[in-house]
Image (cartoon, rainbow, N blue to C red; front, side, top):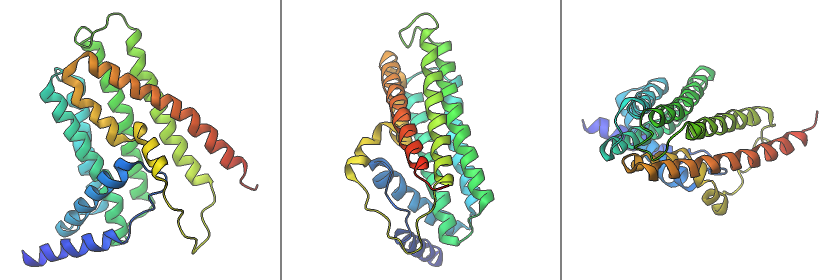
Length: 244
């Protein structure tokens, strides 16, 4: 038992000195999700789990929350359970990459699996909101079908942002070896909060509040649409500047 605890503590210490750059991530990712994922990665290391197994754990928590959103009856307790499942799943999503760096066991297959699960989670979660809106329109304070377009628009913005960001990173040339990572911007980290997945998960705490959930979800969807336009403009300019 003592050896296991020592192994976990040592793994956590090594992980603290082997973190990815904080450039381009929100405050939630920097101060909540990554540190939580670091503890989970150290624990997974102590248990002998592989990064792919940690990805599977992340998927179980995330898709359990998605299923609860789609088939459950909206309530405060369901909202708490959904938020918890999504938040824990998101933390394990950070842990799998950290575990891969710790053990040197990362590879194309693991990265592929991680991204496929992420894309499926994003797509399914907004589909689940669409389903619960369709099943309980009176509870969320609307009539007619127009409000069903909100989750569809949010899903569009989220998926295109996810895909566009990944593709941009693949097409941009990497930094020269030995180049120091740029210092993260606190202002940018604050500005990115509205489109951080961890912040988005918090909106489900309002699932039992009916109309308040609808408006909060819609506000984040509008922010996602605006950020998508800004991201697409930025990425296109960056790739235009890349030499042929």
